[in-house]
Length: 410
Image 1 (cartoon, rainbow, N blue to C red):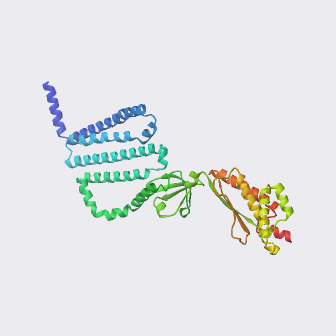
Image 2: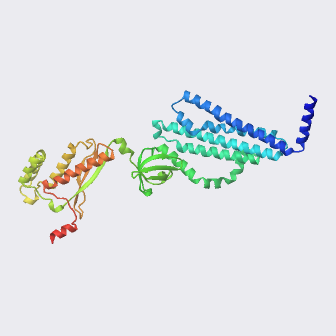
Image 3: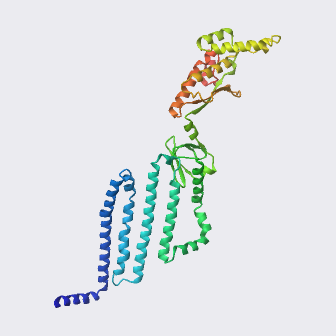
């Protein structure tokens, strides 16, 4: 026993001659304990908690494991070990101990801020799985909360190294309010715009919006605090600053989607030289082939009663059927029978102001679908038929002469 005490005394005496060795040994032990604690926290505790979460709520397990919140929180364990264990290291100066403790504490603050940010991201993902989230996205508000958290974290880290209270630092920043307002100008404008957009329900994810000033024409696929992302129909992406939706004009096609119909507004340019009064033979032919007998009989009866009152007037003062008026009646009749036209919406066939390119005959109606492909097919089908049947009324489409027309004239 005495021999062991003697060896211990000799070892202690020898170690006192080399203080740096004792310090290095103690520091190595602290680092080794921190590594061991980190291993236990991440490979034992974290895995156990993940397995427990998988059993309790397997529906959202993929989201929880994707963002690694538990793993980030586990990073605090080695920092706590180092912060408390560095005090036991022999021959280490007070300044170094204080600096290591402040660095470990700053790391803990930053890790907690990252963990809270991940929790908010998980909440946003879970919220987006709710169908109602398309009408009320919260991503912008969560980003604002994250910004505030990191600002507070930065102030706490700064206060740790300066050894001052956070509220004291906040009081000192009062004089820098104007500078902060300038630095975070876009953030403040975007926050106000996000509140307005959400309050007035101006834009939702999935809406088709059109903003010519920024060449945006497509579906909204993402809404954040600072930007709104639009996927254009050519598959390109346009990023719009959030406040632009409040300050600039844009068109939202959501009303069309909700109504389930899409407007059709297109004109045929009729050659004005082909417009004339119809003869009896032409009327009879149209009765036989175009199912306009009811319209023609009604119109002839109406004109006969009107012209009877003008019996003493000249013939050219009397009203007569025209091929263009009969064609307008046929177009409206055709639209009323077409299965692709919404019959509960407005259906108009009207003349516009004559131009040098002919007389525009505009068709104003609504298709009973908003699907782009089906809408174009319905519109094309209608105008294919109308252009093809125009000659039956003695009408022709105006078309500017081409080089081939001049060659024929030669």
